[in-house]
Image 1 (cartoon, rainbow, N blue to C red):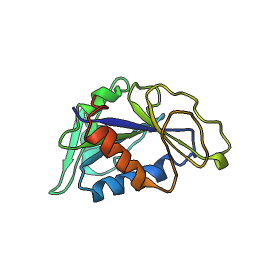
Image 2 (image 1 turned 180 degrees about the horizontal axis):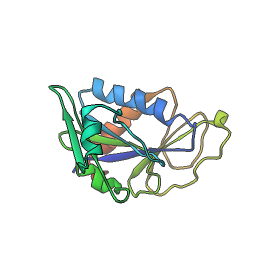
Image 3 (image 1 turned 30 degrees about the vertical axis):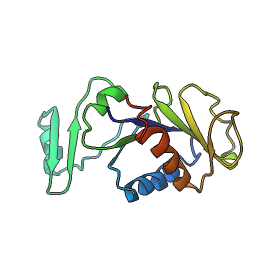
Length: 167
């Protein structure tokens, strides 16, 4: 099973910025990385008038766009898929990061920035580590917002080599 780590935190805490750094560091170490971004509203990645959009408009339930270097799937759904259902579509990676999914029961990294003006999430269950500009929780590993190298070292030791977060 592929380890799944959810990067969680309140809006504007720096989740995306930190995740960008962490992905780059993991890639530099030779790991294959997938990311699943949870969005609370509907979204559209297709462009009106393009072939795939036209296929969807004609009634296709699933449309795939494939090139020599990428593949995208647009799949209609009657309800939001669970994280595990989305993960079932992913293979050939060493680790999956999610941005969001704080309600799921996966290992989590909480990102917190004092300047954002929000309180920390305060949920310690499944909390693997904290990335913050201040100390938050006793007994939980803490990392700087600017240090993705230390987090990657931690994930290698705790997850990628020990396999404790495999779903």
